[in-house]
Image (cartoon, rainbow, N blue to C red; front, side):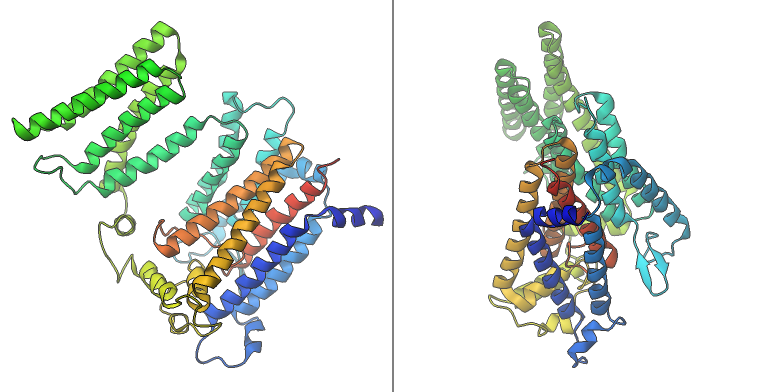
Length: 486
């Protein structure tokens, strides 16, 4: 037994452990900076359990001990217990909805004395194991629609539970699992559809108030119809491999669109969107006819893509104007530049930018950030922890932190790719996807380039549940990686 433990410790990936420890230490120092004030003078206060810094240090120790324990659980145990862990965490998440207290509109915390635990942070661990266990079965093929639906069920069940807890930001993290599905053979059309949905929403809503020169046509509305035409032609060319149909559609759309624009501007004004929709209908009919003649199902799916795109865009417009709550609309309008609300929805991001910009090249120094000391940035030790790094350590320090994060994610990607079986690879890519989503969205919202959805920066944002949850994901995968040669 001792010999086996020694072998495991020797085969654990050392660079990943070093990067993990480096991120944890830098994260704790950032929390010290965010929690510091002019009233504090004794550095030992940072280790007091009455302070957030002390609690975070305690959770870091607990996480490392828990991770060490997880490294001594063999791979077969993870495979065997995956469905039980997943089911138990789903049940815990459902129970949390009913027994938790309402904290800032969220019912996602189970309080134990002065400490709180957020089950949603551990559900990612269960989802990773369940998805890997399913996809690692002998004969599993993601191209089988029944298997694909099972994967979607595993991903969306915890997502729905977390939404019921009113934790939309944490729920959106589960969309990162689609990167795993894509790596394991999911068609790129699914990712294209997701990207298209984002483009339709941003362009359509962002440019809806802008009118098309002197014509009574919204630029956003017109641009979305043109984008649908381009995407459809691209799918026909690169996915269906039908060059003739693609070039015919593209040429017809361009020629008739330009002709309609010329007539509307120079002869008589009319709503040129009528022509755009007429062209989309013609594209649909043309694709369906070619699909029937050539018995090519992909062309029919491309026609369906156009139909769904039109329905989705109009539903987005309806949801934004009639379903979304006022504060949700304001956040989106601020993000898209439609409204400047520096005292309301845009306050956090505005103050965060000021803090980061005031750091300059080298920063103001550890514990010397004025924006931080005076508490200008709300949630500065949780969701907006990166602004503390920017203010105290400046451009150079921020760049170093980003470089360590990127190195950590790339190292995990290397480990995921070198796995000898699907179970290990899915666990690895799930970890990569989750860390990348948190990293990209958190840094983006601090800089004002992604929506403020309230998700932590791994190993930096204050929170014992998130630190422990990320550590469980990492150390369990490192044990799986250590057994890849078996």
